[in-house]
Image 1 (tube, rainbow, N blue to C red):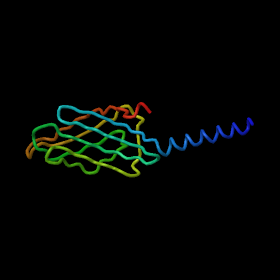
Image 2 (cartoon, helix red, strand yellow):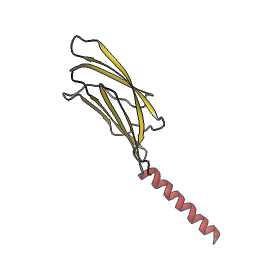
Image 3 (cartoon, rainbow, N blue to C red):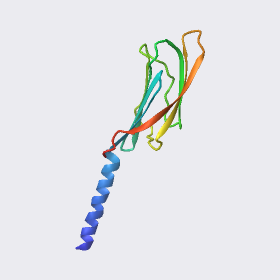
Image 4 (tube, rainbow, N blue to C red):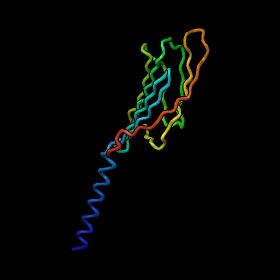
Length: 136
């Protein structure tokens, strides 16, 4: 009787663990901004498949001729950045992208040029981690 109860208990634990790995969604958001830029990274893990979205918004009033940025530590890739007419850039990796939520902060390094005859500007912006499913 004890052996049967023990086996049932082990099977129940295994089922809970399999459910947790395969069906629970884990998400994290990193946010940061300064006077010129607003940055948001949403990352999601569903089962073993990670995905993320990077949103960069220019808050200034001048036109941007050139933009480039990096995120450190380099857990997220962002393609070749270019802003739309509203000063917004979005990059999305939807499948098999990895998931990273270990660091409390990421460093966002951005270089840009406003107008045709201006000098390049650069900023370091701290992105702070905001767990979006802290209740789970």
